[in-house]
Image 1 (cartoon, rainbow over the protein chains, first blue to last red):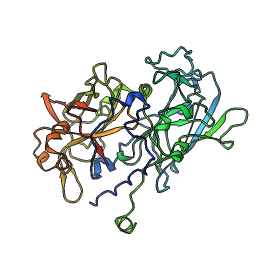
Image 2 (cartoon, rainbow over the protein chains, first blue to last red):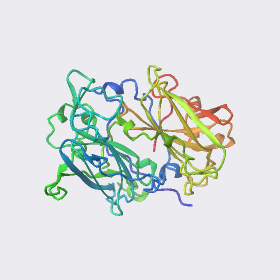
Image 3 (cartoon, each protein chain N blue to C red):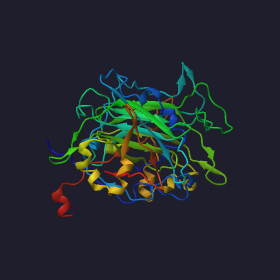
Image 4 (tube, rainbow over the protein chains, first blue to last red):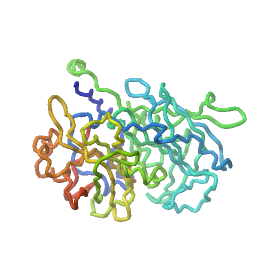
Length: 236
Length: 172
């Protein structure tokens, strides 16, 4: 059996550090010792078979039991690719978010904003053979958090993705264009590279927008891709 | 360039499904084991809002068989995670190496800007002595990766995110 092809290391500045001082919760939770660089084996190069049969998809968060949630209805769609530009087909994508008032359907969320009985705020999708995904939801609201005085999270939707190898596993957040809270947010700004931050912001997309129905936003996601071959590395 | 990761935050339980903590729920045969442990932070306080995922081979060491091998579990008010699964077999490593039975463990939480990866090995496995990854870990830190059988079929491994006895985390 041939050895699995290693994944490329992350580009410098493209990922947030575990020690992000402006984000208070990292203080006691980031490891202080360097990680061990482990060779890629079958364990990290394979991924669970997450099939729609075992994990039924639900791609419409905008209504519960046929009743419409309150707020601006939106459609979010895009493509999941790897760093080599190849589509990631049949990948399971989970999303979760606050409601239009900025409140999560979660017992830990005590923000004084109304819950919406017609909004739960989670979905499960699978990319198609070309890596495309799409879901319908309500534009979430911003909400306060206690990280620092007068701290508010920018409007965002959480994403969880599985690739073809567990080494590609990723959790991230999608933001919205023009949000005035973005420059103030320690989580968004923990990503050092400006271009990498910008790619976390969806863009309005008239093609995804459905007339008389919902605004469309495009959000593409890139998972880790294969490392350059040893030949290329030797001559880089 | 891969998309930047962002913390799973405190409300990831929106995608918590308690039955996922049992990887055998689709009807796999074989003796069940429990994988459990407490996650603590740099102050020794339990991490009560973490999402823990496991991924491992089936008892024959295969990743391409029918076995689900994937689980997700929340830590509880004591910081404890608990999975029901089957014990994995040895898995081929790179080259002609053989890896000792192990479970890949991923930890996501508020305060973790990106998830942490580690492995759980099983005490008493002869292959632990020659496992290629364990060989990369300084001997004094290896115990942070090796679960003990605290009761028959119950394998316990506590995880320390930071500080004294800090768990060995992996970069792959």
